[in-house]
Length: 136
Image 1 (spheres, rainbow, N blue to C red):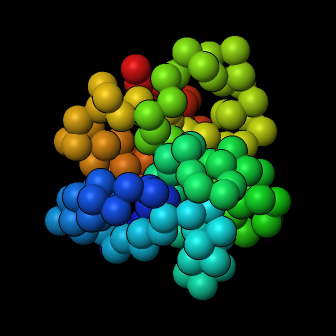
Image 2: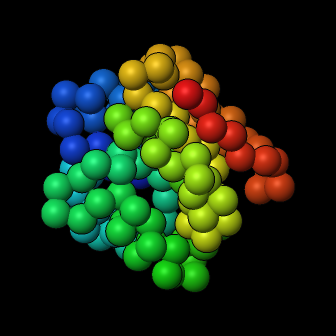
Image 3: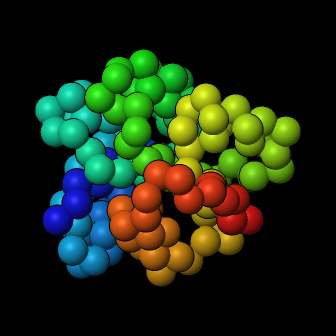
């Protein structure tokens, strides 16, 4: 059973995503802020992080920089699931992927709940060498 760290500021969406990820056979730690996400990861090493970029106080990018600064979290796959359109990061996809270790970028308005769950399950079962993708 995989441990997923879900960082989603919308409590209703966090509940929906969390329940669906649990139904798929995972344990889920839901956090609403970047700082709570770091604290949760510190208490229990996640196997996967699902992250909204638009967070209160600290952004998802700030979370990623701090998260990746810890050696034990360097290889943890990260899936961005956000309302920020992917074209805003198209020029910086290499930075997100290489520097911050983002595995996949999912744009919420165009991503079904099934796609989110399937992406999470795929990241949990695929070796690190598989190329990353952007789903728009």
